[in-house]
Length: 267
Image 1 (cartoon, rainbow, N blue to C red):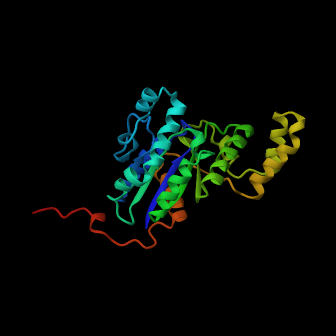
Image 2: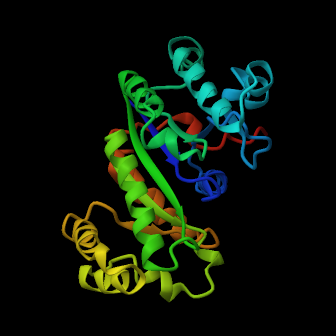
Image 3: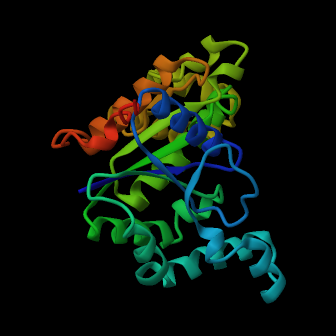
């Protein structure tokens, strides 16, 4: 059984930075993970790339050859990858053992994980290969500065949860850049009455019933909760990683391997 994180979220939410920090944390703790780039528009990385979609197709090539814009080109690249799951991806996955841990750094185009079926089909392919997959949704904590933005972020996150049908861990990224953390912490465990009151103050009266319904969904069903992530703190990274590991039951049947230890020094 293999393990995988599918790192998704809006553009600029810090997905690649998260992957880089996670890799460095695992190197420090002597744990192996492999990062996979699924963004055909990516140009540079702060982590070693184990697999790279650009070896199959790049956004620049798709735009030039098919005369597409950035969004259309990205969708085409993802559909091209989907058509090559049994060829390119299957060949790449053959290099990994049954209990290896892969982290897929995905593009930030929101359509890919809300209503276009590519990622859902991609996950199904991994599951057929006996991978246990967890979706990791990143939302910029600086985006969550008022109740309307919080509701917007929650609904986008909920859309991805419904589309992918996976264990889901939601992260508020870039907490180290938030000047007033109290403003964000208020939305980690919000009360419906507080949300309704704030929404009604910011929106026209005709939206009162909608505001009440949205707030109740968020509170009563507890479907969308966020974990704050401060990349300056190793304890914060470890807490997020432990939460994800628990979701996919990582390590429960792990065997000790020689590669888990440093080779002995030659005398």
